[in-house]
Length: 123
Image (cartoon, rainbow, N blue to C red; front, top):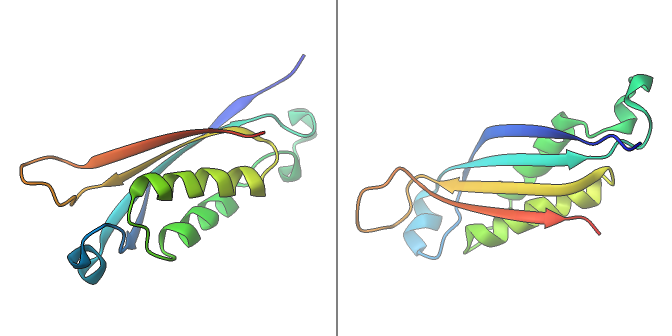
């Protein structure tokens, strides 16, 4: 019998400068990231060892480094990079579903935010 479980991190907030337009790079804005990580532990959960699972503090730091790092033109590319990096860092992750929200998207009209979700399956 195989155990899997999901670790969810909601509304991780970062200031960054992503987007196509020069003003987005110049002004920057907050971005919000949700990470839903499907995990298959490397050892039984009853062992109660952090090495068997995903250390979500470290996962947060990985996300932060990517979001606050180099500029991306597309939040789609940003979400994909986060998913790929988390799966590479933690082999226990079988699936990473990453959502990136951009509240101040340059859209003519009123909206709460634009969100992109990438569903990445580890190989």
